[in-house]
Image (cartoon, rainbow, N blue to C red; front, top):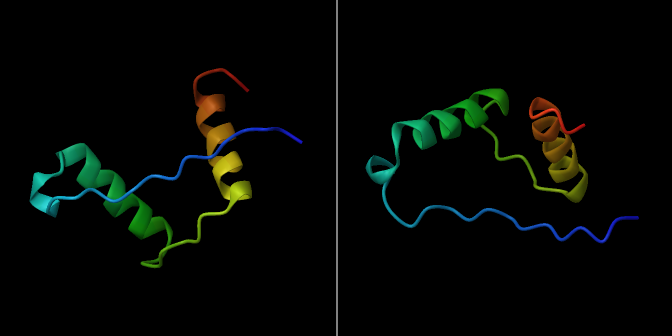
Length: 60
């Protein structure tokens, strides 16, 4: 088992209008793919996302 430490993201402190267009697009994308629900963050989901993102950079 890995000793990887998971750092969970926090919500921005400002209003939606203070987010960049890119940040707003990512939030909307996540809402669309999760059918409007807030998926629970679990270690296995974080690992899967990290693996997916690493694969896009050629790292796995």
